[in-house]
Length: 310
Image (cartoon, rainbow, N blue to C red; front, side, top):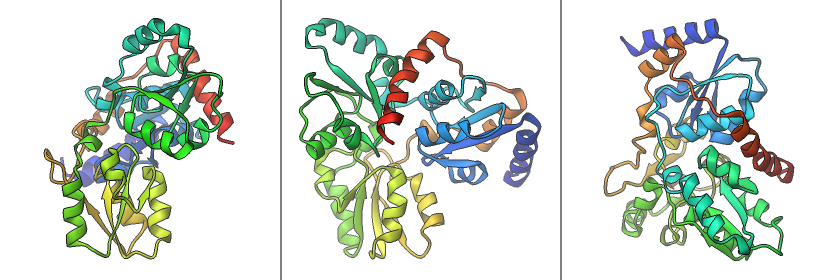
């Protein structure tokens, strides 16, 4: 079916189902363009809270749909492709974290979990953080308990450096951000000497040291808009370039490739397509559900984060 016909059918089904379509910034451009809200996972789940929808279609990966379930317990949550997983989430299975905490219970870790994790990991955490607020949340962490930061060691290391707080870092990472190399970034800088390097804190330190600015995907938009630089080398998943080009016209945005992909795409994020989006609205499946007891446990550290972020 032509893309325009698919889009028309999606909009018809969305109205019929009283649904809201959420798209992460790493999704395909055509999915971003048809979504009601585009952004990072937590902001999207919170945006859905403010609507009168009955159905949430989360075009992202599985843990993001779970987060929508946590914050929207009365809504049906759909994920166009249940195989849309996350390498960062997979690097910290809840059962492994539970075993680690049990083996080290005398340390009484204060568990800080990056939102990019499973609901099981969130339920074991004391507080949740995002890449945008990790510094602020860590600054409020108790000083009489050691901090365990899960699952992303790169975001944890960057936050530790920014706050001066010592942390034990879980050995986890996003496979896309982990693949960027210093030579790849410097190669683009040589081709575009006038460009500023903007990277996500999930990148390794060797990349962060090259950056002119380090921030979450959401904060890349205002930074690039306000900067006087004419162009930017963007070191994160390439899906964000579509939003940057739409929202910051007149400036150039340059992706950095990886060994496996010329433009640093996450194959899991790209599993969602317009056809699968249409199908899930038509069939009201696949649905993502979470046990209520687990949802309540995971909601507490999320609520703590929101309270500390005020």
